[in-house]
Length: 141
Image: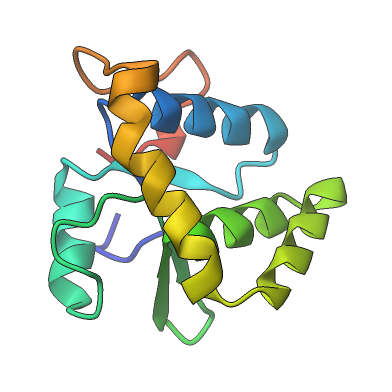
């Protein structure tokens, strides 16, 4: 790759069981390969975070990086990332976009509360997930 990201990249916590399940969920519903993935612990995420100082420090969220045809990256996090991800899956998942009628300051506390307990409730993985056959090309790191 020449340093540019694919149009849609999901940055996820590589040791979070819920994040791993989310990645698997997207893989299962995105057979055309619109979404690519990289762990927050890897070099792709480090480069994105360095380019985007507007991202909160020590972010504890899935991030969705969308690059437009003009090359401009837009990064979403917390509930906005999840809603944009669902909309990007298409089909009935687009209906999740209706939740954007509620502003992020109302949605995000629920996301943050869940994120704060996800390790205790769902556990952690020993290491980042290994892609299954046919998935490796969708993982950047």
